[in-house]
Amino acid sequence: MSVYTWPPYQILIISFYSITPIFAISSVTGESLDLLKVFLNILPPLTNSREQEELMQQLPEFQVDEIYTVPEVGTVVGGTLYSGVCKEGEHLVVGPTDSGSFLPLKVCSIQRNRSACRVLRAGQAATLALGAFDRSLLRKDELRTGEKAVVRFRFIKHPEYLKPGTKLLFREGVTKGIGHVCSLQ
Image 1 (tube, rainbow, N blue to C red):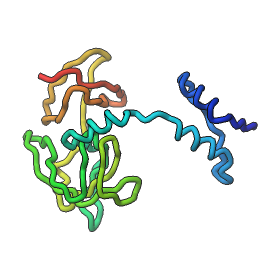
Image 2: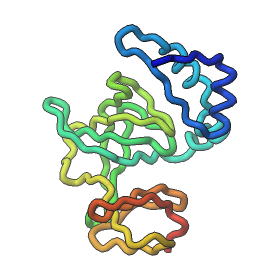
Image 3: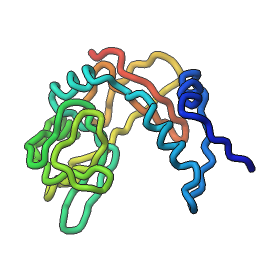
Image 4: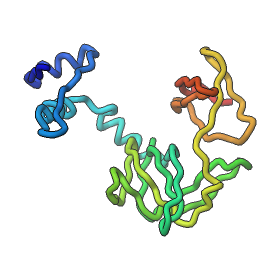
């Protein structure tokens, strides 16, 4: 097997033509790891600095992907902060619950990449420790889908927090689909 090392400018050209490069990297010696690092450093960010600043000016919105109970810590949620800024010790609300209400909570601590941090900004993924918050009041998103088309949903189990532009994962049995909210009524 041959490993070809391309100059960084060639990687940049290929990446703009939507070709996915394959890197042969040794997990033992680290050979060609520098090439992967160069490639990752030249990838453009998903949002520019102006868009990122606008997102951080909005109210915090954290989408929960995972819920854990950690001994001596309490309830911990993992997910992504889609807008705003979340700080350690900040008081937020969570919901909607099955009854449609929002409940107050306090962010006890924040971790990113298994390291403690005090501030979480829009676009960052993290875990938030909520302390003694009742885990049964939290749930991950659960959506159902029909056929491939423009669809209208009516949530019958419990309310959902949605806004136009929100990306959604649709699941029905083993079938999954991705979509976004076009409008709300």
